[in-house]
Amino acid sequence: MPLEGSARIVDAFTSRGYNVEREAVTLIASSENPAATIERVVDATAEGTLVVRTDHVRSILESSDSGTSVDGVDDPPTSTGAPPTETPHESEASPVEMEGSEVAEASAGSTRTVDRSVDPTLRDLEIDGDMTGQSTGTGEYDDFVSVFRDRLERLGSKLRGRVNHRPASAIADMPGGEEVAMVGLVNDVRSTASGHWLIELEDATGTFPWLVMKDREYVDLVDELLYDEALAMAGTLSDDSGIAFVDSMYFPDVPRTHEPSTADRHVQAALISDVHVGSQEFMAGAWNRFADWLHTEEARHVEYLLIAGDMVEGVGVYPDQDEELEIVDIYEQYEAFSEHLKSVPGDMEIVMIPGNHDAVRLAEPQPGFDEDLRELMSAHDARIVSNPSTVTIEGVSVLMYHGVSLDEVIAELPEEKASYDDPHRAMYHLLKKRHVAPQFGGHTRLAPEENDYLVIDEVPDVFHTGHVHKLGFGKYHNVLAINSGCWQAQTDFQESVNIDPDSGYAPIVDLDTLDVTVQKFS
Image (cartoon, rainbow, N blue to C red; front, top):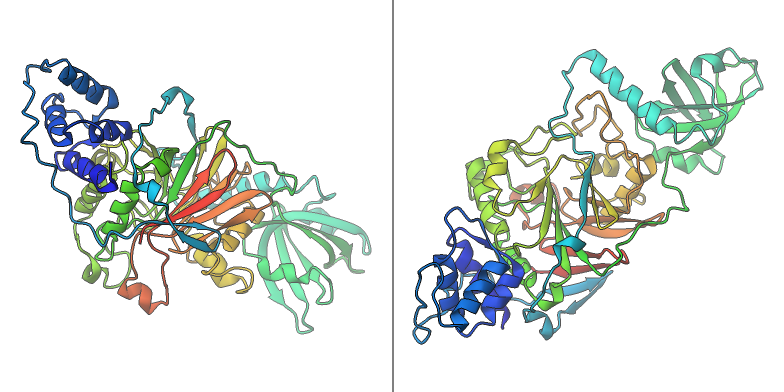
C-alpha cells in the first residue's frame, strides 16, 4: 500500500476524532476496499471510544468475509466506495536518513506499510523522578538552604571517596604546609592580578579559598566551572593557613567505566522535542510526513516516542510573540497539538515532559501538566511527567530534560567547549557536573524544593534534551547524549537573536545497541 494510502486512512479517522493503532491501519490498507472498511469500522465503534484497536478492525474484516453484519450494521456496497480525502500536506519530499554527518535518500521500500504485531507483554516502561504533585517549595529562606544542602550531600557523596576531605572550618584551623582536601559548592571564581585563579568553595560549615596557579596543567578546567556546582579540591595549605594551593580538582562526573544497559530485543525509540504547535512557523507538513513514516515498514520497530518539551508555542514567552502566533489561545494550541498527535500510530508508547513554552511554571523542576491540559491531550494516553524525569524503557534509562540551562552553559563556557552548533557537547558538561541546571541566580529559573530534583543521581544510558532547536548527538563516557532539534522553522525572533534552527528531524535510537539514525522530514 503506498505511503499516502496510510496517511489518508489515519486522516480519515482523526477527522472523526479517533486515534488508530498502527496494525489496524495496515489491516485496513490491505483490505479489498479500505474506504468501505473505514466506514464499517466507524459505524461499529462504541460511543466514547478514543482509539480504534486492531482487534476491533480484525473482527470487522472477519465478519465481512463471512458475509454477516456487525452490531446490526449491514455491509456497505464495495463497488462504489471512494478513497478517503487526503489532507493537504506540504511538498511531499521523501524523508532522508542521516548517520552522523552523512545524508542520503530513504529507500523506496520505506514507503510500504507492513503487517506488524506488537506483543504488549514485551514492553516495559517505568518512570523515575517525576515530582508532579510533590512540590514542597514555598519560597522561604529555609527552602533555599534545604535544596543546596541536599545537593551538597548527594553530589558530595560521589566525591568524598576520591579525597581525604575536611570541613571548611577544620581546614582553617590546620597548620600551614599541611595537605588538605575539601568538598563543596563553587561560591566564587575570580582571577588575581598575577593571572592565577581563586576559587572559593562552600560547605555546611563555611567557605575556604583555593588558588589555581596559571602554570598548572589543569588550569583549563577553571573555565568550565559554574557557580553552585559540586567540586572537590586537594592541595597544600599556605604557611599562614589562609589559602590552599590546588594540586588536583575533581568533578562528580560519569565514571569512565560506565557500561550502559541495552534492550534484549530489537526495538527503537523516536526522540523529539520542541513541536511548537500554535506558531505560524510550526511545520505541519514535516510533522505529517513523520507521522506517515511511523506507519511504514522502515519504522516497524519504533515503539516508543519521547517528547522533551515545548509541545506548543505558548503565549507571552518572548517580546511580540503574539505577532507570530497562528493560534492565540493556549488551550486551543493544546487541542491542535492533540490532533496532530493522533496521527501517530495508536499502539506507540508516548512520554512527554513540559518545556519553557508550555503552560506550567517556568521554574525548574517543572511539574507535569495540570488536569485540564492532560484531558485535552488524553486521546493517545501518553505518560505526562515532570521536567526532568527518567524513563526506563526495556532496561534502557533515558534522562529527559527540556534543556533551558544549556543556554547558560553555552554562554558561560568557551566556544570550543560548548556551542549551539554542537549542543551535545554542552550536555556533556551537565553529565560531568551530574546536575542538569547547577547555576542558581542566572537565566535558568530554579525553584527551591526540599530535595534537589535536578541532581543526576544515577548515570543514565541516554540523555535527551531539546530547547536550543539544534540537532546534535554523541557519547560521553558511554552515555548517549541527544539534542533532537525542533519542528518549527525560523521565527522573526529567532532570526533577531541569530538562531538558525535544525527543523523536522527525528533521531531514532536502537535500544538494543544505542546506535542512532536521524530521519529528516523537512
